[in-house]
Length: 253
Image 1 (cartoon, rainbow, N blue to C red):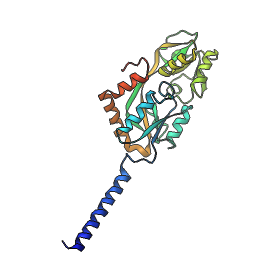
Image 2 (image 1 turned 90 degrees about the vertical axis):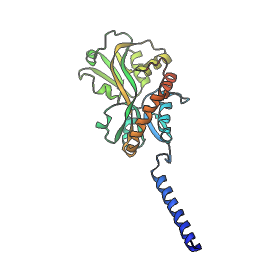
Image 3 (image 1 turned 180 degrees about the vertical axis):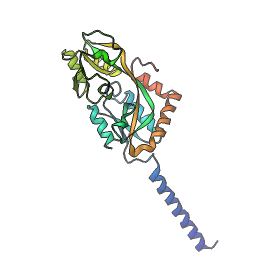
Image 4 (image 1 turned 135 degrees about the vertical axis):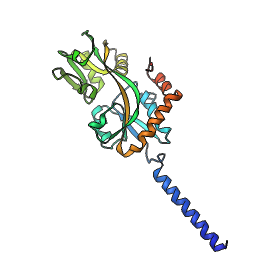
């Protein structure tokens, strides 16, 4: 090969390498200018100030296995969290029931459950079996605006007070402004421990639901790989370890 031909060949190889590098950089999921932000409107023990909460730890680990940096961010208002995820302000959301895409069409489910949540009633004085949502008839009931599990299942003739966050919710109960408040078991138990409010959980749970993560549709290509990563975490024991270390008294189902 002549020197001229050798030079042209070398230049061609370099151009091909640059083209492949550019293509890889444009398509690799590992290269995001900023971490993916998945939001949630829940609180401790799912989020903790030192980032040791269940969601604090779960979200980064799922996407780390895809070569992507990700973080979970906490919102005080549950409804705002869903709106921001649907509008693409955030990249997704965490700890939500199946079927949100019916009302938020820009969301794509990561189709592997995070955890099972018990949705329960807390009371100070009332004593009755919560065998169904119909058991709430005739009660003054409080819950957080945007919690679809309650909005879609509470009978229409139940007197309802909606608030924006959990502290307000349990203040309603403490001040006897409602008979019961509806919340998720892990967070409710945490609030009772922290606040010293004297209340108890009514049994059985009003509902138990599988909880999921969602991505904005611009990241739809990551939904399948993220589900696979979550399944792998369960298979190798990582998920169980995170749950046991971040949710006091956790028992896997």
